[in-house]
Image (cartoon, rainbow, N blue to C red; front, side):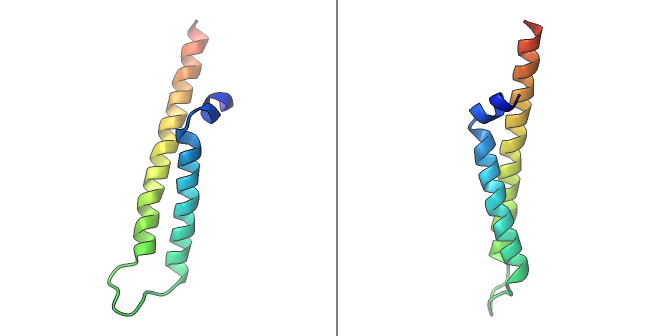
Length: 74
């Protein structure tokens, strides 16, 4: 199954987006808001990137499982 995950482009893209989202979320939690700013864009962008990264990872893992179960039946 690991070979199938590494062949799928969604897996490294999902990991990359998750790493970037963790950096943004930590930055958003540590650094204070700028004067006059209503929202913390680091937290917002990190959350959106994290959801996208998780989506890519989940679809990659589900495709790898489907491929593994399909190859076992033959």
